Image (cartoon, rainbow, N blue to C red; front, side, top):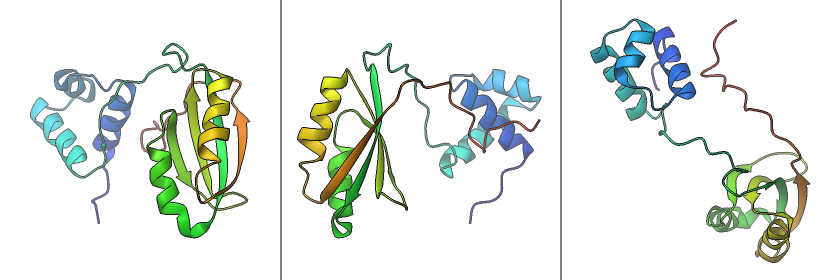
Length: 155
């Protein structure tokens, strides 16, 4: 079992969640710790899988992906793994979650326009063996994301 994160680890996560390109020097100065301590802690957090990676936060609309939707799927249960691998390979699918409730899977998809969304859902996803039904929920607006619980600062 991984060791619990202390207050400094939590503060490192919060700072890096705000600016993943922050230099170790700036991180150390912000948190009032040594650069060696900052390097060691970030490396430990990365090696233990707490920090999964660093990536650009891309605005999908500015990148030409003006249509977003959540697509729910009902599946034949025995085919989840095969369908899951096929879904992971689809361009435009940015998040996949196996869930409990009235449907089995929820996807977040980002595509150029409604025509591309229709092709993806009707011509590709619904035609996959194992997919029983789909339901598409068009996203009208996305406010800025909330901080994750691990990086939220106490009030």
